[in-house]
Length: 206
View 1 (cartoon, helix red, strand yellow):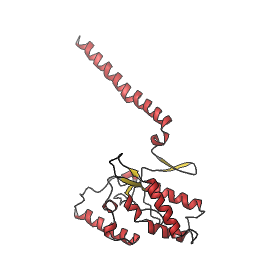
View 2 (cartoon, helix red, strand yellow):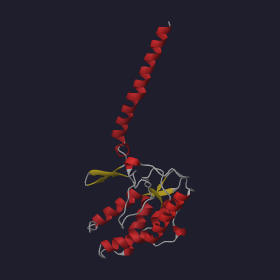
View 3 (cartoon, one colour):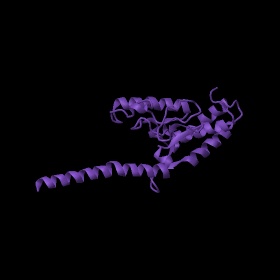
View 4 (tube, one colour):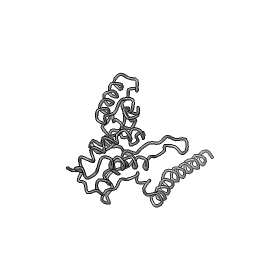
């Protein structure tokens, strides 16, 4: 009797493992692959019909005509994603934040009081893609001037500002319905800039 009960329990365990460890994952993968391919593939970024990135992974956008993201403790290296083990109040972390704040102020010609706290603190993953709306808005002037320079005056600063502000408004996202706060996806913003300049026949390689 004991042996039979053990065999039944073992058989039931195998069935459960097969159903929930194989059948269920395969079925859900098949359904999402065919009904929600954009989400199941990790929000891919396409260029020339090729997947080149993901809207869920931030990058080090260093060009002057790009929006800057939050600081990264791993320099946006996805193979070693993470952040500093020290707390936000630690002297090392504070010094790094102060250093980034000064750099951000100088680059965007803004005062410290205008810079959202999230823009000078390191994201937990090191590849964060979200920035506060205000963090995007205070970069508009710098980016508009850069686009004007790259286009050799073909795109006026005011025209570039208008495009950037409308893109920020159009692309803002909420992290929770109704009661959530709004943010910007930096990958999405910068892809919009690239597409905008491509449509204007501006060679960003120059």
